[in-house]
Image (cartoon, rainbow, N blue to C red; front, side):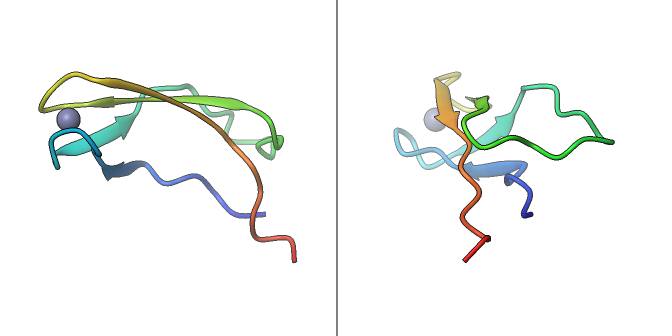
Length: 56
Ligand SMILES: [Zn+2]
């Protein structure tokens, strides 16, 4: 089980988008869980559906 990144590069402005969703620390993240990120530069919000790509 891999973890989602805390940040990624904003596709709109090249700034840093930060994870704003609450993640439970003692439970694995279920594939299909929606994650929200917000860019600290342009304040764009990105909603990403988490998939576990590390299982193969
Ligand atoms: Zn941005």
